Length: 471
Image 1 (cartoon, helix red, strand yellow):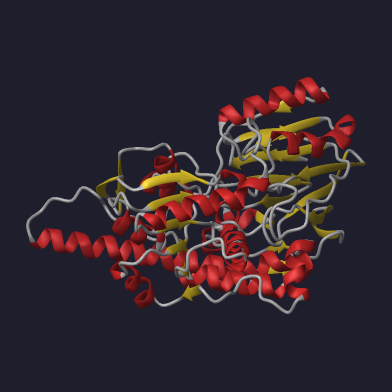
Image 2 (image 1 turned 30 degrees about the horizontal axis):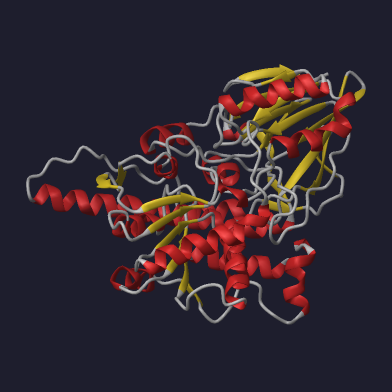
């Protein structure tokens, strides 16, 4: 057996790892690289292997940095099955179509703007980036999904089997144990996917790690510890109240899967306790609306706190002040709204979607607050905002950052360094090697040192394209 790391190798986005078992090749994840538009397009558009050579895809969860380039794989000749949990398969139905729609719409928006400039004989150096794939490509991809529940061993070909367990990262997220044969003996590879943080709103805690020979481990927050969850609600209340007092808008980029629902639930609690002024709250994302419906379909994944709403006959994701906006015309109406309000919109790293329009309209007003609520990968607009750049580009246009920018990091859906070490510790003595992925070099190097020192593990941070034999 052999593993080759083609994505999220010393980086956070674009998760993609090839497993060769016998005469067959399988793919762990097929995610979008996110960052500089032109560079990301070139990498995403040119797969490092023949798509037709892949027997199957094993998908840990629905976030686009793990699932978002599967339509490119299908468009280029992949004809196998995509194995995922039922909730992940249902989420991808909406997420991949939405990704395609946003790519098509953003390309059309920039093309239209460039046409207006050319009519005025103005030079524009911002060449439009074409969509990677179409809505039709996304629909063709959905037909290839094959759902598999947790704790069920499933053969996927080439003598390889998989078994999903709850990862607690987002709805439907799983880590996966792959088992194959090498030299007439069993070889077990544990892939963490994105491991969740214990105690976060809505979801159950991650399952314990099963024993394995090799571990492919995420390292997003391998160099830090999260702040306690207990202070999240109070910090959110304080930031929102301060912004409302100065007559501003609260603009919240949020991942449509997981983070948007967590924020709605926390705001629901604050409203119930009369801890927020009476202002409108909007979720402006058709994808987040569809995803919230998927959450309602899977209450079996809820923790006891979220289940209490269900037991009382209440909707955790609906209350009087909250409005979900689906139509573009509804979204545009917010541009003219002069009263304070909160808007939660995707994408979470500010790389596409309606959040870009809200930022374009609100980033230069010092009364407003831009509230970052999740990890921001290198070279994304979200990262530049959280690094407090004085000027950023939105749709290629330079804009001054005059709005307040704050972060609500404690809501992270990723395990921190302590969580990761605690999860690995019970299986450490059986592991031959650990491969760190889905982390920036600094985070990986720190986590690698900790795992070596505390658990005496052999740890490698593979580069893109690097291969390793597994025996």
